[in-house]
Length: 155
Image (cartoon, rainbow, N blue to C red; front, side):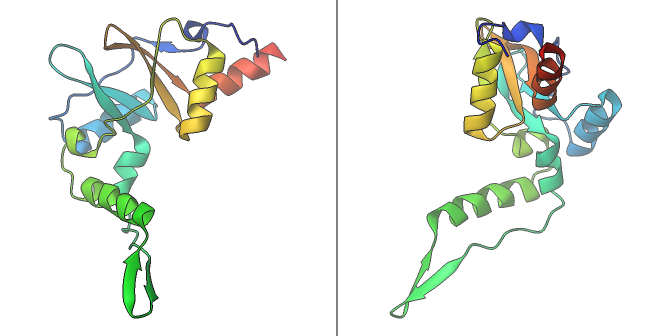
């Protein structure tokens, strides 16, 4: 993979977008209809608010992960990372709209990014999709599968 290859060469342009007030059922229908695993969520001005992934929809149906608590000398300690995970899962479990279930800190890159930038961001952030933005508006999306197909073509 060439480090300088522009991300535009693999991104899906004009991504399907969702609104924060849409129901999760509507969002699931949109993802299924278009055969995609994620969609940017935008406000009325078309600006990126977050990303709704199929994983976020599954989290609304999954059992919650109960935080691990350790007793030391009669004092109970809950591991901080487990509390954050539980908080996130609880938020998604009770969500009824896209805005409640979406990831608000979704990874994004600008048009000047390279495929290497996208691959690095996905790897370091452990995410499957990166939104490509221009002036705060989503103009494309890159999935891990897009990068794998590019690698297969270029080897």
